[in-house]
Amino acid sequence: MADDRPIGVFDSGVGGLTVLRALRELLPLERTVYLGDTARVPYGTRSAATVEKYALNNARTLVQEGDIKALVVACNTASAVALPALRATLSVPVLGVIEPGARAALAACRGGTIVVLGTAGTVRSEAYPRALHALGHRGEVFARACPLLVPLVEEGWLAGEVPRLVVEQYLQGLPADVDTVVMGCTHYPLLRPVLRAALPERVALVDGAAATARELHALLAERGLARGGPAPAHRLLVTDAPEQLARVSGAFLGVPVAQDAVELVDVLMTA
Amino acid sequence: MADDRPIGVFDSGVGGLTVLRALRELLPLERTVYLGDTARVPYGTRSAATVEKYALNNARTLVQEGDIKALVVACNTASAVALPALRATLSVPVLGVIEPGARAALAACRGGTIVVLGTAGTVRSEAYPRALHALGHRGEVFARACPLLVPLVEEGWLAGEVPRLVVEQYLQGLPADVDTVVMGCTHYPLLRPVLRAALPERVALVDGAAATARELHALLAERGLARGGPAPAHRLLVTDAPEQLARVSGAFLGVPVAQDAVELVDVLMTA
Image 1 (cartoon, chains in turn cyan, orange):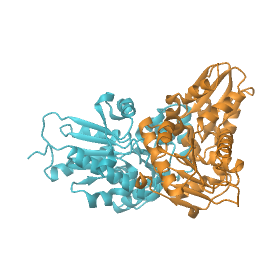
Image 2 (image 1 turned 60 degrees about the vertical axis):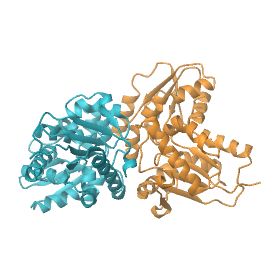
Image 3 (image 1 turned 180 degrees about the horizontal axis):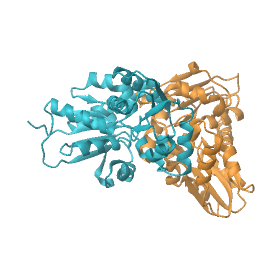
Image 4 (image 1 turned 90 degrees about the vertical axis):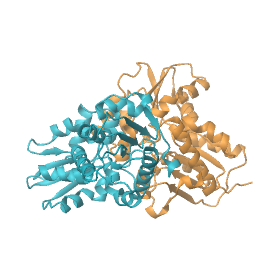
């Protein structure tokens, strides 16, 4: 049994390409259709109600435009606030990145405090502490909003004095017994070297992309939804400025994408 | 003759409050209704077509919700790309901030190069060079996009090492004969001390807010649209997160505003 339909993936913008990359690496025979809501990025500073509305627009677009068999919410902020509404609305399985990120953190943690770095919306939602405690974590969880990291990454300032100082400012005053830091936003892995250099060596630095891919793999196997080949085609959709996604595709996705391979869609037309 | 209807002002978010402040100071008897499109901020990184669509949504909301007698586009990016569409659609007079900003630059310029700092969208539009040359400027115009300045201001990092380094990086390699710098984005006046400190003393640092207020004043007088009193009421509308506008109102508008005085509207319902 093989299900030829693609996996749908959406993000507020281009950051979710880091999650798409992990999915494509672990599941090389699956087709994917990615939607970056570049007309309304960022989500991290918006209210939960607005992020939920945007997430539903995106999901409906992927269902109608892509005929998807499963949905991966690659955006931490949307995963933090919109999963219940998405699951109530869609008939396909829906995966977020927060629970896999929490699993990755728990696997790395040696009993100390887990620190979550994320957007204001993700931190305010308390989705990571909730997920960590539901998974059995008994220690402390400390969450910090880092609003400037997304614009830094989008500006391409990934090294040098400015990112170093910004990261150091956000990491000031962490609990002394921190042993694990979660990059709770899909943009942050691009700043991994800067974060790594600013943290003590004993601290583990994790993100949920690979864990999300593994969870999707298990889900597809369980429900008989996996695809067996041949080599799949992929689609990339955006709601604005296809050239911006094309420009960062090398760094974020690991493969360069031509601008004319990125499709422009209007998510409101399918709402 | 007195026209009791309010002045409509819109911006991509909260930055336009610096323009609203100048309007209220020069025209203390005019009612105002301000709309911050905080559900879709920022505009500076989006395509011209998307900014034009958002500007039309906002303008229609102000006309239907506010019964305005004139519209001020307080956002430089929207002024740069959407004025023709707004003027073709609305029956009230429409003012942008770019021509007044260019006038302020021209008044300060002593024959050297004029440097415009703005968003990627404003710089790409070439609206400032066009306006400066149309007003008779014969020297050079040099425009530079500064994408990180808006998130810096929104994060409230207005002083210290990070803003200093970011500003210095954006000001690197300016033409040697620069004598005037235009703050071509409504957020930038909040960084005036940092910009001032990074520029040689001989360089004039200008923005278009006061010039926009003067132009509106003249327009209202000319068309018999001015209001004579009594002390006016003002409205503040946003498309998301009223608490964010309330939080920065002291710094941006000069007067603190309570969160429950900020109204939430849906701009798409009136499109």
